[in-house]
Structures are given as C-alpha cells and as structure tokens.
Image (tube, rainbow, N blue to C red; front, side):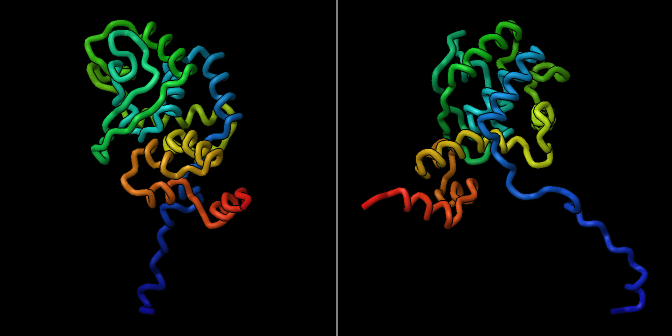
Length: 208
C-alpha cells in the first residue's frame, strides 16, 4: 500500500444501510388494508391506480401510460385488456377485476371529460400522464399507510403481487410468464425468486 493511500477516506457504499434486492410482493392482508385506508381517505384516483397496478401487473413505465381507451373504450369498462410493453414491444394481457372496475368507474366520473386520453393524467403538466417518479412516491405513501417498511417495497411489489400468488397456488410458470410478458421462462424464474426448495415442495405435492 502506498503511503498516500493511508490518508484517503474510504467512500461510503451507495447501498450502505439500504435494503437491496427484489422488492417484496404484498400479501392479501396488505392489499385489503391499503384499499380500506384509501377508501376512508376518499383518495379516488389512488384507489383506482392501486387496483389497476395489481391487476395489470405492468412495469411503472407502462402503468402510467394506460389510456382510458385501454380500460373503458366508449365509456364501457372492459373485463380484459391488452397493452404493448415499452421494454419488449410485446403485447401483454391482463384482467380488470370487479374491485378495479368499480374504482375506475368512480375515478372516471371524477376525472371528467378531458382533451387527453390518459387514465391517470398529470396534475402539473397539461396533456401529460403521471410520471414514474410520482407513481413511485404514491406507492411509498400507500405502504406507509399500513406501517410497512417502505424500503422493502416499491412499484415492482405491485407488479409481482398477483403473479406470486398465482405461482404459489398453481405452480404454473408458463401462466406467470404470459402475465408478466417475459420473453424467456428463465426471466420469470428469476423474477419470482424461485429456488430449489420451491421446486421440491411442488414435487412433493404429487402422489404417484
């Protein structure tokens, strides 16, 4: 070691004190609690966005670009929809469940007629949709509403939530791949954090 190196103050790692790695999916009890908090607070837009995020399973960049015509063309709410992913250019289907349809219906009534077609328009930039950073801040607020650790959750938590439940219930990786819009099954395996123990547990449930 050179003598000059002795006087260099080591830099603090960027991730010091932070939780890193995949963000945890929400549990059903968390979903119920957040919905109740948003309903009580009468945060109509946030409730619609939260429910949409759970159903659509989209990346933040795709969720914020949802249009009214994607979910309610001509004012009629769809049961299913399909959007093109920005990252892969591939279409990804998603369901719109009754809680989401109810929340979207209330939000569209409050949103009213606008020149733009964004489902969640920006409040500060006319003609634009809400930004991904603002969406991330909203997710952080939702997590704090039920006293969870914000650092452990993020926008990907909402993307992963329903797919994680589908995998735990069925073990169907192909279905999860389609719902997430992944090109390769290996990407889905990594995304869900599937390990050998998971595979063995599924195998043990099969009686021959």
